[in-house]
Length: 141
Image (cartoon, rainbow, N blue to C red):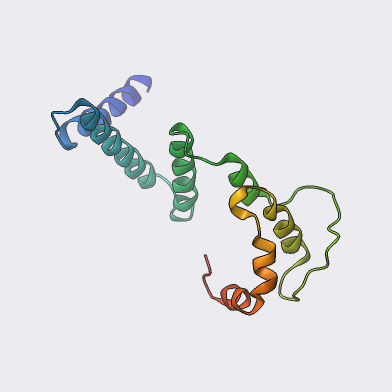
Protein backbone atom coordinates (compact mmCIF):
# COMPACT_ATOMS: atom_id res chain seq x y z
CA UNK A 1 0.00 0.00 0.00
CA UNK A 2 2.85 2.41 0.82
CA UNK A 3 4.31 1.87 -2.65
CA UNK A 4 0.95 2.65 -4.25
CA UNK A 5 0.66 5.87 -2.27
CA UNK A 6 4.19 6.93 -3.17
CA UNK A 7 3.46 6.26 -6.85
CA UNK A 8 0.24 8.27 -6.59
CA UNK A 9 2.04 11.23 -5.04
CA UNK A 10 4.76 11.05 -7.66
CA UNK A 11 2.22 10.96 -10.48
CA UNK A 12 0.51 14.09 -9.10
CA UNK A 13 3.88 15.82 -8.81
CA UNK A 14 4.92 14.78 -12.32
CA UNK A 15 1.54 15.97 -13.61
CA UNK A 16 2.18 19.36 -11.98
CA UNK A 17 5.63 19.55 -13.59
CA UNK A 18 4.37 18.71 -17.05
CA UNK A 19 1.17 20.79 -17.05
CA UNK A 20 2.27 23.93 -15.21
CA UNK A 21 3.09 27.02 -17.25
CA UNK A 22 6.68 27.06 -18.45
CA UNK A 23 8.92 30.03 -17.69
CA UNK A 24 12.64 30.77 -18.16
CA UNK A 25 12.85 32.65 -14.88
CA UNK A 26 13.38 30.13 -12.08
CA UNK A 27 11.26 31.91 -9.43
CA UNK A 28 8.32 32.20 -11.85
CA UNK A 29 8.65 28.55 -12.87
CA UNK A 30 8.72 27.40 -9.23
CA UNK A 31 5.67 29.53 -8.43
CA UNK A 32 3.83 28.06 -11.43
CA UNK A 33 4.68 24.51 -10.33
CA UNK A 34 3.64 25.26 -6.75
CA UNK A 35 0.34 26.79 -7.87
CA UNK A 36 -0.41 23.86 -10.18
CA UNK A 37 0.52 21.29 -7.53
CA UNK A 38 -1.64 23.05 -4.95
CA UNK A 39 -4.60 23.02 -7.35
CA UNK A 40 -4.09 19.34 -8.20
CA UNK A 41 -3.87 18.34 -4.52
CA UNK A 42 -7.02 20.35 -3.83
CA UNK A 43 -8.89 18.79 -6.77
CA UNK A 44 -7.86 15.23 -5.92
CA UNK A 45 -8.71 15.69 -2.25
CA UNK A 46 -12.11 17.16 -3.11
CA UNK A 47 -12.89 14.08 -5.20
CA UNK A 48 -12.61 11.97 -2.04
CA UNK A 49 -14.56 14.04 0.47
CA UNK A 50 -18.21 14.88 0.97
CA UNK A 51 -19.55 18.08 -0.57
CA UNK A 52 -20.36 19.43 2.88
CA UNK A 53 -16.67 19.14 3.90
CA UNK A 54 -15.18 20.93 0.89
CA UNK A 55 -15.65 24.45 2.24
CA UNK A 56 -13.96 23.52 5.52
CA UNK A 57 -11.10 21.84 3.64
CA UNK A 58 -10.71 24.93 1.45
CA UNK A 59 -10.61 27.18 4.51
CA UNK A 60 -8.00 24.99 6.19
CA UNK A 61 -5.88 24.86 3.05
CA UNK A 62 -6.01 28.64 2.57
CA UNK A 63 -5.10 29.35 6.19
CA UNK A 64 -2.18 26.91 6.00
CA UNK A 65 -0.91 28.53 2.80
CA UNK A 66 -1.28 32.00 4.32
CA UNK A 67 0.54 30.85 7.45
CA UNK A 68 3.37 29.39 5.36
CA UNK A 69 3.68 32.73 3.54
CA UNK A 70 3.55 34.67 6.85
CA UNK A 71 0.37 36.40 5.64
CA UNK A 72 -1.94 34.98 8.32
CA UNK A 73 -3.01 37.23 11.17
CA UNK A 74 -3.22 34.57 13.87
CA UNK A 75 -4.67 36.93 16.48
CA UNK A 76 -7.64 37.81 14.24
CA UNK A 77 -8.11 34.22 13.07
CA UNK A 78 -8.21 33.02 16.66
CA UNK A 79 -10.72 35.72 17.56
CA UNK A 80 -13.01 35.06 14.59
CA UNK A 81 -12.96 31.31 15.25
CA UNK A 82 -13.53 31.50 19.02
CA UNK A 83 -14.92 34.94 19.77
CA UNK A 84 -14.35 36.66 23.09
CA UNK A 85 -13.42 33.84 25.45
CA UNK A 86 -12.66 36.03 28.45
CA UNK A 87 -14.74 35.70 31.59
CA UNK A 88 -14.77 39.47 32.08
CA UNK A 89 -18.16 41.11 32.33
CA UNK A 90 -18.81 43.81 29.76
CA UNK A 91 -19.59 47.08 31.53
CA UNK A 92 -21.31 48.83 28.62
CA UNK A 93 -24.88 47.78 27.93
CA UNK A 94 -25.64 46.62 24.42
CA UNK A 95 -27.09 49.52 22.44
CA UNK A 96 -29.48 47.62 20.15
CA UNK A 97 -31.82 44.69 20.77
CA UNK A 98 -30.75 42.98 17.53
CA UNK A 99 -27.23 42.45 18.93
CA UNK A 100 -26.94 39.37 21.14
CA UNK A 101 -25.21 39.52 24.52
CA UNK A 102 -22.33 37.40 23.20
CA UNK A 103 -22.19 39.50 20.05
CA UNK A 104 -21.86 42.68 22.11
CA UNK A 105 -19.14 41.05 24.22
CA UNK A 106 -17.31 40.09 21.00
CA UNK A 107 -17.65 43.63 19.64
CA UNK A 108 -16.10 45.04 22.81
CA UNK A 109 -13.12 42.70 22.46
CA UNK A 110 -12.78 43.33 18.72
CA UNK A 111 -12.56 47.08 19.27
CA UNK A 112 -9.17 46.75 20.96
CA UNK A 113 -7.90 43.64 19.18
CA UNK A 114 -5.81 45.27 16.45
CA UNK A 115 -5.29 48.84 15.27
CA UNK A 116 -7.50 48.27 12.21
CA UNK A 117 -10.51 47.57 14.47
CA UNK A 118 -10.00 50.65 16.62
CA UNK A 119 -13.18 52.74 16.63
CA UNK A 120 -15.43 49.90 15.46
CA UNK A 121 -17.73 50.23 18.46
CA UNK A 122 -18.06 53.98 17.97
CA UNK A 123 -18.88 53.43 14.30
CA UNK A 124 -21.55 50.90 15.26
CA UNK A 125 -23.10 53.29 17.78
CA UNK A 126 -23.04 56.22 15.35
CA UNK A 127 -24.37 54.28 12.34
CA UNK A 128 -26.82 51.85 13.98
CA UNK A 129 -29.41 51.97 11.17
CA UNK A 130 -26.83 51.11 8.49
CA UNK A 131 -25.43 48.27 10.60
CA UNK A 132 -28.94 46.95 11.24
CA UNK A 133 -29.62 46.92 7.48
CA UNK A 134 -26.34 45.02 6.98
CA UNK A 135 -27.23 42.64 9.82
CA UNK A 136 -30.64 41.90 8.27
CA UNK A 137 -29.24 40.87 4.88
CA UNK A 138 -29.63 37.22 3.99
CA UNK A 139 -25.88 36.82 3.46
CA UNK A 140 -24.13 39.81 5.04
CA UNK A 141 -20.73 38.18 4.82
